[in-house]
Length: 87
Image (tube, rainbow, N blue to C red; front, side):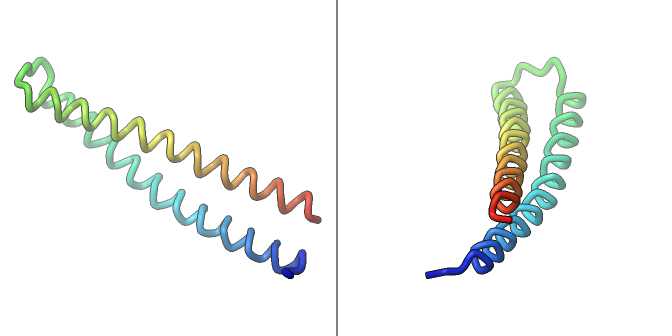
């Protein structure tokens, strides 16, 4: 059976992994947002079906990145709360 200290160490390791993931995802989300904005500016008013699909895909990727960032932040917050309760 694991001790409280071992449990806390495992949660801290998980929190560090989440923080690393957040940094990577923040960089990727910024790239997606920039790419999406540039594509929208460059291809505005285009009605070509492939352009419309591409812009929709970029918008969806941007939304998913934001949602995932929120999930990662919530996971870190919950882990920090759990650690605080463990003492």
